[in-house]
Image 1 (cartoon, rainbow, N blue to C red):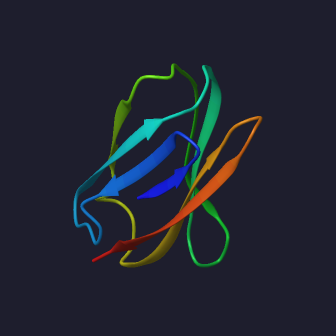
Image 2 (cartoon, rainbow, N blue to C red; image 1 turned 135 degrees about the vertical axis):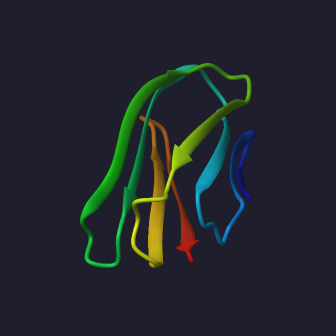
Image 3 (cartoon, helix red, strand yellow; image 1 turned 90 degrees about the vertical axis):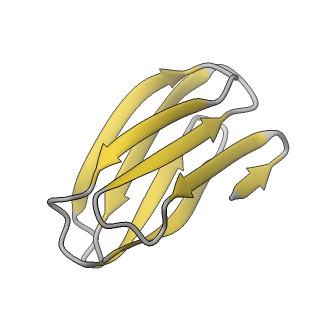
Length: 88
């Protein structure tokens, strides 16, 4: 869990095998980019969406990801958060 002011980013289960749930609660309504990169820096998942202040769960299928370490980044106009994700 990463908390900044009132913004929250949670990813579970971590480590994962099939799917992850990303819970996002921003401090203001705004567009957000969710980007997952592999250890080589290659983008394996990307989504841009409007996120209201309320918590927004997002399910991501990771079955096609190779086992390894990934970085999940949440990028908004006011902040950027990164969480390490492990795919088994």
